[in-house]
Length: 370
Image (cartoon, rainbow, N blue to C red; front, side, top):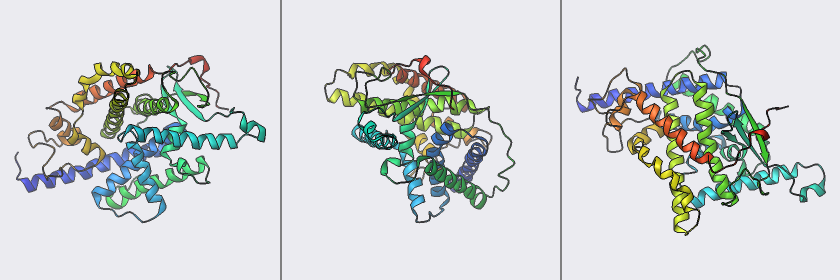
């Protein structure tokens, strides 16, 4: 069936609202059912992204208060790897410095503060030794590096509660979804993980000795983001869903372009480390999975571009398809399931390459959290 232009645009606007509803229901299901610190902290920027993107599309005005600005900053934290490489290094340096001060001040005796014996970074691993979380990245996402006297735990709880309330308000007040607390639990248990604590000011075999501290931390934070998605978030869901595809795409896209900038940085500075990133070139062909139109739909909810043209082609539109034919329109007819599988495969290949820059000793992982 062919619609005239205005009628088809109206259909796509309804589709956008349906997608916002579906994503919001998934997020509320996570909030209600997941009681795990690494999962909840890693999800905060994605919750913030949903709130900001949904409000922008639905024309919901933000109240002018510090929390709203903080939520915006957390959402923008997902873009830490999309600017200049110098910006990424500055980010990790600030978070590392803040954690240095915090854990050094926590030492009991004054003379021990000068011994550089504090541990300022926790890295979490699954039972295969894959990185799934690191505390300095969480510290950055929560804006703790900006200062403030509130404890990390209290600040995280406050932000989590605020985002949870905003998601509920969007669903109830703007999308008329009223039954928030009786959704079917379709989640698996969070996979088990352990940890190793480090002092980033000391030489440690875990880090790559060819790079400075900031470069190692940039690599670690990229690995933490993509490792979280691959090894904690995806396994929690029993089935694919459009929000999960969204998070896969955003994370892979941002990680991939940071890797390209990292390689370019070393090339411009005639560094001997340039060749170390050549292994990523064999992944290059998979970037056919990236599309600027698709990226805009993943970061935002509009299905009509800035030139007022529908992104979903009428010949690809199908009300029964996930994302209504968006994947098929942006990737030459590729079905949703095939695109999801190829994207997840790319994510795993990038993760494996990033893992190769670190030395992980499975025997040093602690599994006792008491």
